[in-house]
Length: 149
Image (cartoon, rainbow, N blue to C red; front, side):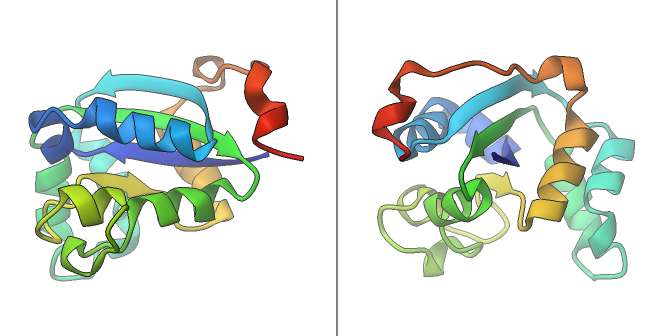
């Protein structure tokens, strides 16, 4: 099964949308295998967004993600990354489709509520960056037979 890191960003937490966002991934059929409420340190933010270090928006990304607490989660499922990204919607909420998290709840690209891994390779990297192996729970969900073949 593929895994993806999902973060409810500081704006999502501050707006009281964590439960709504978690519910959307649950209703989608992804399985929650790790979750914690945390304040991202400067060092972790710099590591997480390191791929953008040379871009003009890098400092703003780091400042934003460290500005308040986040809900960090690991979701698992078949093609979890594509399923999660479709559930989140386009990065720019103004361009995100209705029915997606960003399309329904977001207004601006700088406050887009949620982060999700963008590839299987980054899914592994990001999950390992935010979670230790003992923080991920391998469990059987009774309803899986109704979600996947």
